[in-house]
Length: 368
Image 1 (cartoon, helix red, strand yellow):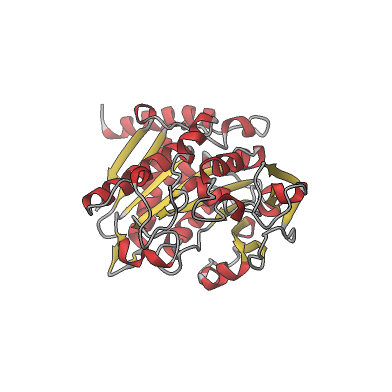
Image 2: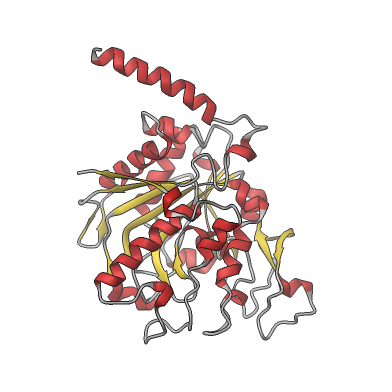
């Protein structure tokens, strides 16, 4: 078979499969969302030139995003891959990650490559919204300085308050209630037992891209896709890790992500592991634990993605002479008694994705 006929056949086969992947409006909530149309599948794209002297390189990052989307979906082009998830008329939010500034946070080059992909799918620039919970963290991370022209940005509240119970940018009708409060809160007050969804996710957008980073977290074990949602899309999150021993991230994280609005609207997870931290997270102590995996991961399944990222971090920890996260105890750079990485397995048990290694389809791609 000559090359032209082979390409034609491949295009015809893809056209049929793409039609089945693109849901109608009535089917959207069922086919997209969490764990999405590709449960268990994780595409990993490595590029040795994507970071040089600590600086992200735009062209390699763009190539990684395009190839990762193709590998995730099986599409023959980046355009077709993005169209599996997005279409004209969508209002798409991108949840960035500013925590741990300046060492491991969302980067301009990756964000801009995602915006280009959304534009390929026909999403108008004005219908793309960058978001993080706190205005001050968004600005101190410099995100407003590199947003492509026309992309909007928003936040839920200006900054953290002691109880994190302000309702400025939150939806009083959408919340997760748990028998859990901060010690200084009032357990008899239902408001103190609830985490309310940001209006960004409940009202402002109809789809969301979860742009997460690869990093150790001293209370949750790791902060990847699941925690970027659970602690960025709601208020009253400090109750999940209010002290070194009063730590409930293991159950809090999956309970939040299991909210129907989050499950429906978060349709794609992009893990930036070009640069990462294997200890000292989430904040200022990560500097001496940085390394450069030079890899990006793509999934609709946040559990499979987080299990993959957890494995990567543990391998690095062991190589550096440290204990795996689940077995480690406090030290000078990580104070919590137990790091509750079990939130990933519990999320799997709730049907948020595949936890078992046997059910995770990790597809590796090497670029140069």
